[in-house]
Image (cartoon, rainbow, N blue to C red):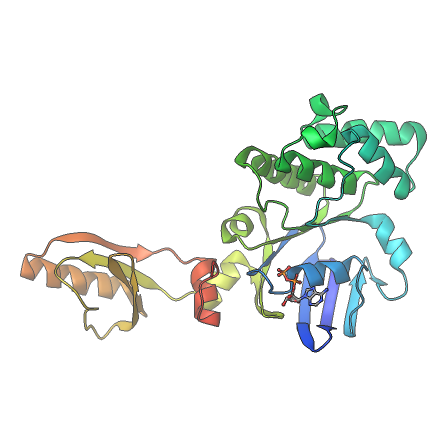
Length: 306
Ligand code: ADP
């Protein structure tokens, strides 16, 4: 499998603060690659390095086999970057904004006109195309930002937390777009602090925390390698975690307990027996679905949403 992006041993510091520490990331051609991590993890910094906005202190980044230190102008022709900040002129219409961005990328004339119509269609805003951007919702502005990054027909799109603070309709539009772009064969890098988004959209994921990649692979590989198996139990009969040999660790959740277990089916069986013998009232007794949240908790000791 060909890699469109290769990030190797990358270190980036802001003064004395190390924002990225020995980061290795490989993005396969035609895949959607998710960068998952809490605020301040280093996601934006990594994306800015990928797009040549920032330079790494050490390490190497190659895009389409070209080195970002020396061939950035060639790389930029093939990469679309959607920053977190909305960079539109409020008083101008979507078409006028897109004309400006298209020209910046070297698209002009009839071709630009046709590209603008196409990208507006893609983001579902053709009907509002001539209205001033200041009349748009936050989600609509973000969709125009996304449209701007598609004008020059890039092969790789880098999206920095595109769904933060937007309405569900715009979020669905963005999801559909990403799926559509992937179908067309584009490669995408997508950052978020919502694990549901990477679970729904991404083929491969890197979990990043405090500037380091702490897990990387497909969702299945990450869960297989890092997720503990667990049982959730809720019953008035127990005020403390039950003492069973199969239980490795217990933590309180809501009104019950999450019990990590090497053999969750045995734990379920033993608990069922315990409750049945005691005639206890049980509100929940079930397997916990492995999730990236739990992987993050296990690897860092904190919840992803902290
Ligand atoms: P994320 O995108 O995951 O929220 P960032 O890449 O924005 O994370 O930030 C990573 C770390 O680097 C944070 O601790 C942040 O405060 C710091 N940082 C980011 N940009 C700068 C900057 N321009 N100057 C100093 N520190 C910065």
